[in-house]
Structures are given as structure tokens and as C-alpha cells.
Image (cartoon, rainbow, N blue to C red; front, side, top):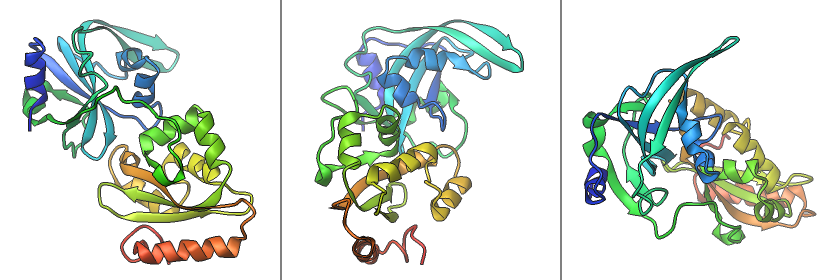
Length: 270
């Protein structure tokens, strides 16, 4: 596989003293900040003096070992800020030009099984491999139809936070059976929405905390390091009219649990 550093050299970018920023957060999503054009400001606000370097290679966690290349930034300076009980460091940075063909389009493969997010560049740069260069810059697309939903958790958070009209209207109009897949392990959770509930309502609960107060998923996230919920992917198995009775939906939910072995080999409980 091609290394990210090789593409940077082809683009005429040669780095000096640099760090790799693996951006992720359970609170304010860096991917959402990137889509809204405020990632630079998001990155410049740090709780510690993390960027003692000349340049920053910025990566945003997508899921599993996949990261979105979000550009390279020159470090111009830093100021220590204090406000009541809050202390933080505010960096001044400048995005290095000439990388529009890579920024937001390049997906990097990098297995990070540790907590640290601000990495010494020379130690890890050769491990940043190119997984994909997308034809277009990554963005949240319009609702693709019930049979084509395959939504990674970071995208789900953005859909919910922005109340994206097409998604909200479509998912608020149906009950049914949905699937949460852990792309790290391949395990499934089969869930359902019925009565006054809708699939939109259920997925909003996931967007809030990653587990929607489902015991097995809550325990999983408490065991795992970092933003493990980013490994979750959401899809729809069956849709039903909002007036469909609960017994039928639970019957179909039981069918899918058996078909996908989500009790014996997944996250559904008996």
C-alpha cells in the first residue's frame, strides 16, 4: 500500500519537526467540525501544550482503523488561556496550501490501539497507509432510501445534531427493525421501534451517548478505550407502518436475531 508520506512528497510537501494529530472526541465531533469548516479552530483549542512542533498532520477518526486526512497545519504560536477554573492552550496555525486534492478525500489506514492522540511524527509516519482516495470530498449525503442505509456512527451523530430534514422525515415515518453492527468485531445488535416510537427516535438515543441505554452496549463502551462507538454502523432490516402492532414487530425482531445469531454471538441478550 502507498504511504501518506509518499503522496505528500509528490505534492511537494516536506515536513520538519511534526506531530500526527489523531482527532476524536465523545463530545464535540471533529468530523462535524470539519464538515462545517471549523476544524482548524477546533484543533487549535487544546487542554495541554500538545503541539510542540512545526507542523501538524491532522487525521479524523472515521471507524476501526480508518482516518480521514484533514490537512497539514503550520504551527505559528501558542497562548496559555485562563478563565475562572478553566485552563487551555490556544494555538495559532495556518493550513499548508496545495493539498485540496487529498484533504477530505484521502482515507488513511492506521491501527491505533493506545490512548495517545498527539503522536511523534517520525515514529508513526510509515504506518499511515492509503486505504482510499475518494472521488469527492467526504460529506453526509442525502437520505439514500430505506434499503440503502448504511450509516457509520460519526455520520449518525451529524445527521441527528443537524436534524437533517430528509433523514429525519424518512426515519420519523416508520417503525420496524434495525441493525447495529460493530465493524471491529463483526458482532450485531438487532433492535426495534414500535408503538409511538420511530426508528428516528431510537437512533437519536444512540447519537446522544453511543449505547442508547442498552445494557450490553453500555458495558462494551465502558470497557473499551476512546470513542469505540465510532465502530458502530447503522442499517435498517425491515420497515413497518407506524400503526403496525407491537407483536408483529417483535416477531420480526426475533427472526432477525436468530438469523444473525445476535444473541449467541452478538450483543442481544436472552
